[in-house]
Image (cartoon, rainbow, N blue to C red; front, side):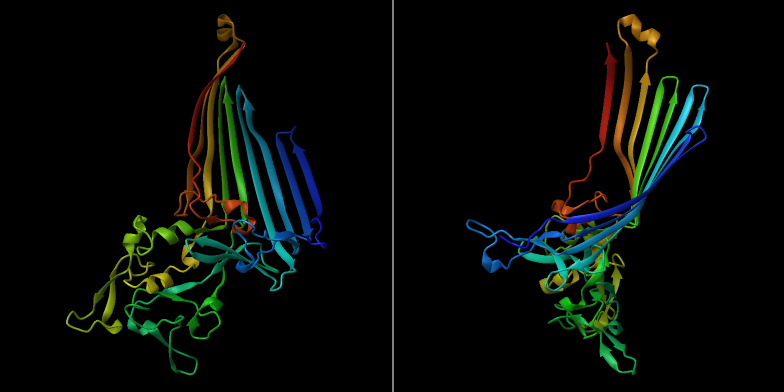
Length: 389
């Protein structure tokens, strides 16, 4: 056991305001909070040669690795908009905003990488670093596509002609880097695209979340509509990464058909990158390559697979009718209500996956917003009858 291991310690402070106006027809609640957690607990990964799976394996040890702060605001507004002649309309608005930042890490490199294994390939998905929010997406940045021969070269500040940075161990060629392949940002400016050119490419934490509810009642009828939403968060669509690559799967998304289509500029000319042009397909898609090396490069984990996860969802619609007392007492009942309810009615979003409300993959806070074939939230229809004898 680790003799230095101890419990996490959390310090928190809150400032709240409750305000009721106009005989409680307007209720406003505000809560500002600050929370700092020290001695964060995390299982430290062990090297594979120690034996981390199978009989007699060694479990990853727990360690206190640093500190994290959270601060934010939560606002609630409840209103009675109309209340007369048997008709009532109530509204409820909820707004929440949270910011987290890693203040300290005690790991050897002061970094925590979180990986995902697909088959035999292990890919770093998030990186947690000091002065950054927890679990930021970490990968390559796509800055364009090789559209024409001149994209392979550029002039530096001194006017010298230089080759655009290509993936490590690859060159200009049909079975290597070709027209229709992606151009990745050379972060360290060394002329080669390798692991040192990865950077933060997205934040799974939303700018804010919100909810809007309205309840209407009139002469036994009641109708409730609730909407919820999130704005500013990003999501990794790992499903697209797997199912748009024609060399990795046979069952693909239809977007795989939008690959960049190539043609010779001069039909009687050579099959050379200077004589190739793009004639169709999605302007943001890569070519379909015959070489696995080319496709592996194009489908490496990059911001191409990081999407806007903002959404507005019609969470629920509920309609009910309570029969008049003079009707139900005739059949020996005290109360009768007929109702129907719809949940997850519709979601407005730009996210291309099934459901933008991802949460944490495998209940892991370091993989928040990572869509690795998460089962989508179903739409539910409920019809019922409430009887009171």
